[in-house]
Length: 220
Image (tube, rainbow, N blue to C red; front, side, top):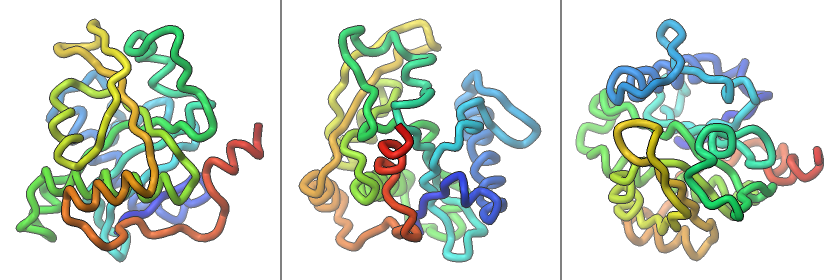
């Protein structure tokens, strides 16, 4: 199932949190060799201390993580503005309650191979994007933004995600880093579902604590 874990739910989802950070170390630290902070078996950074929302693909008993992504409102601290500001034009403002940043998307191919042996990684990423779109619609998010390396465009296209590239910059690693945004709507969701042949809803709606965007607007 695909769920969100918000700050008030961290303590009751400690197994998921532990597995998420271990997965991030395996993918971003061990496999991709990114320059990310490693603490023991976990990959965590300062943005994980800002009470982000995590979109998690997990088993029904919440004991196994298959994939995850970190979601943060652009009205607060983000990698987009603090680290990758050079990747989009100075005159462009991407800070608004309905615009959220998505980072650290990853899947656990080993866990998927055990529980979903017929599923290819590309299919898993497509499911993550569909669930992300459903989650965004549920919570009043109209635009997602992210930084990514150019080769990720193939993954986006395969999932039916139309990314508008705003810019890119060198100096962050071996490859350029792009900044892209994609709009979220029911029409776009239907296009994505058709593209990847998913008819049923993937995202499990959370308890009625209100939309994420409404919380940001209320706090402003």
